[in-house]
Length: 121
View (cartoon, rainbow, N blue to C red):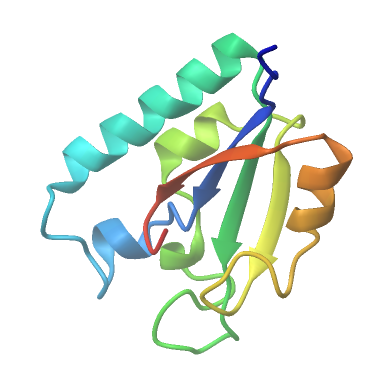
């Protein structure tokens, strides 16, 4: 008997810092990676797969991801797709789990399979 999987899409650090800031991605070209991320979002939305977006925040004045800075914001194409249905989380360390309730959200939604996309994923 086949078991059903419950999936979720987790977007990690798809923030302007990786496009315009000191951490700008050189390879693969960000136009390609962003297009793939947007396709993953669109596919998840079409299939009713829950989406979580995790953003890295650093204290104000920090050289990257500083609270309130342009680099800290989601890429505009991702921000334009975001809905109130998305789980939002903020972190200040590399992992998406220690400072967030993401593991609880996954468990509460019965998710057993995740797709991670983004930068520093």
